Length: 313
Ligand code: 8YV
Image 1 (cartoon, helix red, strand yellow):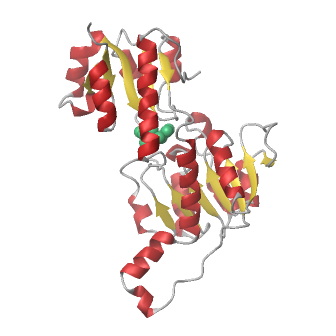
Image 2 (cartoon, protein in one colour):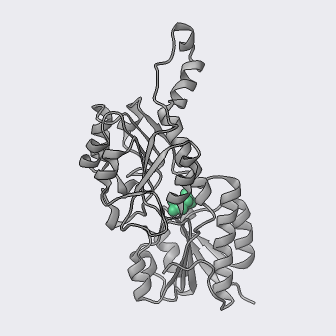
């Protein structure tokens, strides 16, 4: 039997590549010396695209494959996939929700602690011998503080549960108040930031949340406030953030995501009040194995004519 042909936008771990190669003829777009030439030569046979959260699938890419039936995304965020194009052309889309919720929530808490307690700075302080010349500055505590969460979906709720374990007071903002969430609700990010000591951003990316965290929100967070972003680089106005960090208008930031990944604005690296992380919230072996399995299960279900496991509406 001939294997279905798929186009892969970015690499998956070896354990997935092996299983994918066994079931499909997988064209590796990222390896092609000339991507356009490769696409032209395979276009007519490709029935699915396998992509990654941050790489997505643009309308331009999907348009190149006239027999495209499915885009399967290794990641929960679909903001880089042109969903309207997919919908208009009957192309199904799947993602990997739930399996990465806990890891991303863990990272949000880790960044909150690392930024407040300056863990990377403290590590450098010990390693470079500064300790022998004097003590670390006194820092700000986490337990018992006010944690504002922008975005109360699955990951936001997992962050709230963890922050509760640190006796933090929790409030949130989202598109609308959620009937099943008892935490205090703010109808604006600025209102939440004004209340919070820590503002954790975990809204979906895309046009609707672009620059949600702007100069006004950062000013409301104030000089004692700390921003944590584990959502998408687009949700924060980075020019305003850099200015707020440089001028001490907020105390610090813990960031897993940036505007121009992986070549981020070099000003971040010159700042002492930030903890920087390379968009790796779901980056554990356990979670990446589960994500890969879900991508493959969705592909297999599609080609078997069965229901998709995690379709994107
Ligand atoms: C990436 C993510 O997909 O889930 C998402 O939306 O951004 C991440 O999990 C991951 O880096 C794999 O590409």
